[in-house]
Image 1 (tube, rainbow, N blue to C red):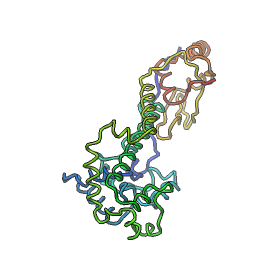
Image 2: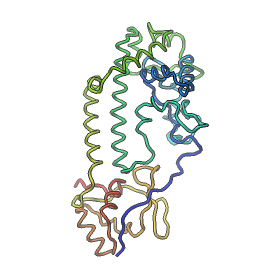
Image 3: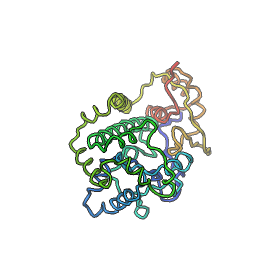
Length: 322
């Protein structure tokens, strides 16, 4: 009897060079920009200088925050396989020499919740993605509320809250926003952009969780419920009486006694014993314990509870809905 107890995590060659996952420019909301500008520590000077330069160049800057120029996001969306590979898309706040983030204490929801590997595989990714969505909704709600409170004027609000979003300008292909566009975006705060961002940071310090949840409205409450539900899923250790069937995965490398699988993410391949693969096809929607007993009897392979949970975590096996 061959007893199988676990799987092996494999390295990935998805990333090229030293850029890691920092080929993404964070959307720094107004209160985060204010905190960066107010950071008086010497270690924060490089980030302050970069953000100051973005403000001066009007590069993707509005009362909502520093989101990066439209040209950056056009390129980012047009070439999906460039993530982790293209130096053109490298975050301007990434310190290439040190291999670290210059605004780590002030990073936004996407950067705070993204990982290339998760302890619980697909289940872990699902939880962190739901948390990203919640934090992102709260950040946007807070940034918008601060804009309303500081009231840049009717014309500015019309631009910032337009259903179609802020219009793309040809001037941004060669630099920052034009004088007229910048004036429309900033209204009465034009020329006092730094002061505006710092006031946003000051006001945000006094906002509690319950208050920002109210700002987020129905969307935030719904996303908070999803976060709680998916956190509870992470606490579950797996049940052997659950009906399971095969999920989607790809065999990316086959060796004498092991095979490497790409499951929920190309960034997190796993290695499993080849003896396991033949038995997996027996999972056809029957309760897991019934199939495990059949694999043991017919294939001479014993699947441990730990291995079963891992296969479910990575989506190799999924709960049958029929």
